[in-house]
Length: 201
Image (cartoon, rainbow, N blue to C red; front, side):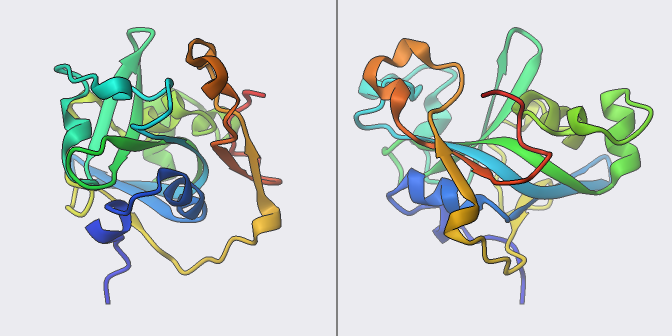
């Protein structure tokens, strides 16, 4: 039986629940034949309704956000600061443009390749502890925009890890001061005690 998360996992209506449940799941890429991957330790949820931080707020539809309106289970990858690719998972059904950002990853598979991609001599926190770092380590770029997350390029697996509720830290999301009152929503989720969560407070 495959451990790959099915489309049905992503196509549920609550991105906050999905973001919490992605903690402890494993994210993999196979780029140019090289397998890399790790365990998700930090996520953020974004909702198309009542969330000014979401790129699809008020039905915003642009060349960048159009993938958000596809059925859940595809990659939404975009650049920040002109250089860092951020990897998001589109959730919910078609037309209901929710997403989950992957912010932190514990490196497990293909670490030598990750080090090469990041230009690091040895394993250290900044290998994958941040949304723009983990994408570099995994080889995810904007060319993976729209990638089916049940295929053989980028996929997620359930290794049957049960994450106790008391090990999940819920707090406001990072870098969304423009979102007004919605900036305070506790939709950032981290695994307590993991050194692979992003350093953002």
